[in-house]
Image (tube, rainbow, N blue to C red; front, top):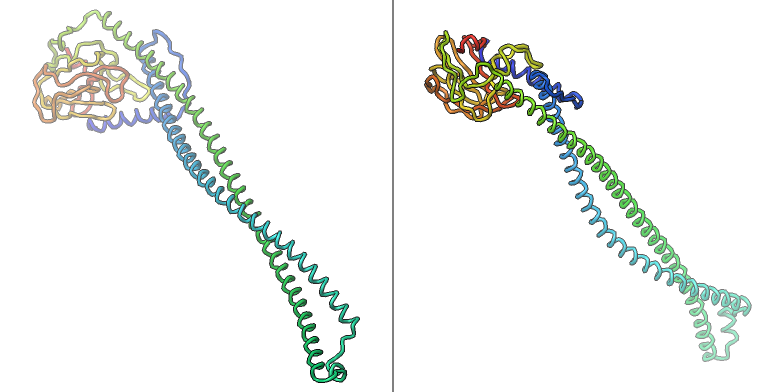
Length: 393
């Protein structure tokens, strides 16, 4: 299996563990003072996963709240438009009500006139019936000459014309009254429809505003809870990292054979390697972890900013970000033997560059997946990881 395959498998295991932690509920862990480094790292891993889950949840809630806010702003605009429309409709209603009042007044006048005209018409009909008006032949026979005949004829014509005028006026008043009644009813219906439409739209907008405001408030409360959880988890992380750092310092102080502090450990080994940094081994080779069955190297505890030295002469084969390894460098020493350095703050060499033993190739830190500043050091033979302790002095 190649170095790339090994790294991919390790990173996949790490990713599966991270996904499982995010899916789990954020159970608060009890931090035990003086716990073993492995337990502390396990707690730290879980806390990091829970914190990432909380941040993701917080991001989703923030986006949702923002969308609610945008929708509420849109509704406020619709309400403002509706209020403008309400003012227009109100003016139209006032105009229609004025027209309605005018029509009612006109209707009242027409009804009075119609009543009066009907009375005149009835009286005239009664008078005609009672007077036994002579017909044309009687008028001619009873006339005293042509002048008298002409006068009698003109008189009858005026009476007939007056009767016709009365009847026509009654008909006109009756028709005007009917038209006014229809117009009044139409105005009443139009006013009622406009009022109903306006009230319905106002009720719908008010209900939508209430629902959206309640949903936004609920999400804001949820976001507040997530932020509280996030702060608590960050505090737990700080406590665990402090304990790990204290254990590293204690291990350095208790080391019976401390390494020189000025540079890499010099000494004889069968491979001719030197130590890349000076510090205690905080995680040995093939140590089982929650996300991997065999730790593919050793972790050397050093603070951020520690220079990293090439363990032997060689040619740089890898130099750059490599997933969970962070900033990662590998040096080919020939004969299938290579050394690799992970989690660097910065890399000082490039691929293809020839380096000498002891040359500074980078600066230590905690990039990629790690739990505090240290150097992850690997030795590979034909691409397979082996125990670095067999190659270091």
